[in-house]
Length: 210
View: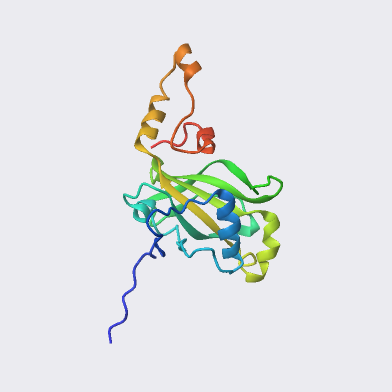
């Protein structure tokens, strides 16, 4: 009997939502309702986020022509117990994810509790040029680690992270290119950072370009 064939890459759409529904969690919901439950091996509210080894798959293969956001769980390594987010190569050196700026806190909706952190990364080609692909990598706050130590991931130098990956819109990238030219005094006084990205991406500045 011939062995069963397996796909090279996991199915990035493990569950289809009913028509009219869109999976669009806030950072807090993604950390508390999904990432924390995943780290504790507890049932998730919906089996909609697949496990992906991001070191093996380029964002182009993950999203293709999809223009929205997609979410994945990725098992990250923490070298020597250091949880600082670093970049990593993808595949056979065709590109890499580069951190942009510093980690941002993810607070509870009440605003009185740190539940996680968010790091923005941009996918770069092997020679260093940045692409349109952006990733938000969300991690549990350090104070949550003792609760998940029993699953041996922390002891083995690994932890689950939740990733939100999307492509910047074309008009957003054109706007950023235009913003590189010198502005007149009248232009500079009326120009604002309005793009398809969040305020945090805007704060990164002109680093996130294609």
